[in-house]
Amino acid sequence: MPPATKDRSLIFDAALALGVAIAGGLGSTSNQPRSAAAIALLAVMGLMLFWRRRFPGQVLAAAAICVAVLYALRSSLEPAFLGVLVSAYSAGVYGSRRLARIVVITAMTVLAGFFIPDALGGLAWLHRRLPVPTVDAAVGAWLVGLVVRRQLDARNKHVAALAEHAALMEERADGATLSERLRIARELHDIVAHHISVAVIQSQAAQRVADSDPARAKTAMADVERTNRTALEEMRRLLGVLHSSEPGGTAAPIPDAYAPALGLADIEVLADRLRRAGLDVSVVQRGAAAGVPDDVGLTAYRIVQESLTNVLRHAGPAAVTVDLDVGDQLRVTVTDDGRGASAALAGVPGTGRGIAGMRERAAAVGGKLSAGPKRGGGYQVRATVPLGGA
Image (tube, one colour):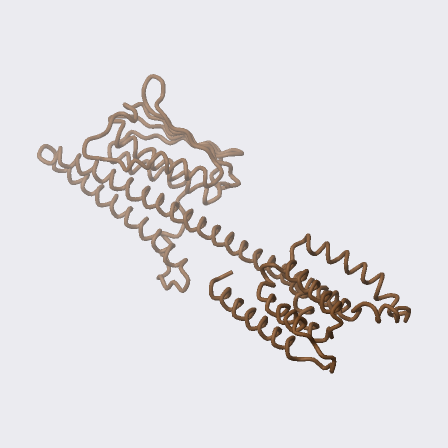
């Protein structure tokens, strides 16, 4: 128990023990004289209640011995009554299961041997020889303590269950928060890395032909502008969705042009943008895209986007084929005939998160992704995603 609660319990037990000791040593409704030994025993019965929580069985046994000695001394048992009640009650509340079994056997014996015959009026002789009322009171107090203990145990189990449930809910909330952070990180990576890479390539092309072909350089710079505008639009859409999903969010409505999620229908637009950047891209689609869920379509778009960005960065001059097969599952295959992942285009560094991010995206909707060099050259990314999602 907490230190403050333990301190209060010790103070209470000390006051209780001292009070019972004083009451036992001084109080009595009987005119029967008491010896010094009886007074000492009654004081001991009270003082030993200080240890009633830590040693409930021993305190109860010591109280029984004191009662037996007092009875043998022919002293009144009335002053011992309170000590007997408290020690028996404490045994029921704080005692072990072994002690409970012992007291149950004792209680059944008392019930069979004392209570029933006594209720029938057949133990008048026993009342003259044994402290039957004291024994009856002790058993009753123990039974009350046992009931209280059962209630406390039930309450503690309920509190423990509630604490465990709260911890589980907190763990799930933390997991959901982490998952959402990873999703946002993947979105930011795909948006920024792709468009910046394309813009860098287009800028490099403009610089190379600036003197020899100014018109072509101007076209390349216009493509840089369009690429950056597209990046800003996608960032604005992402940030708008995030802000509007906050409690009490007051973000302005997202324009209709930004509202639809990117999907299979946008892959051709993506390919056309990269063609203007100098990449030879062809897109082949089989099956209708209408039945593809939004989250699966967005996943496919991001996988194709990241794959084409990697080709642009690393493959050198290459031809790329994007194969989209819509059936019972969506199969996405991006294949290039370039130099593979070992070749890096100078001035266009990667983040090192591309392949891992694509795998995480595919796994988030229940799919799988593999990526690696092909035999004979080139690189291939293959993803299979169920249309039902994760």
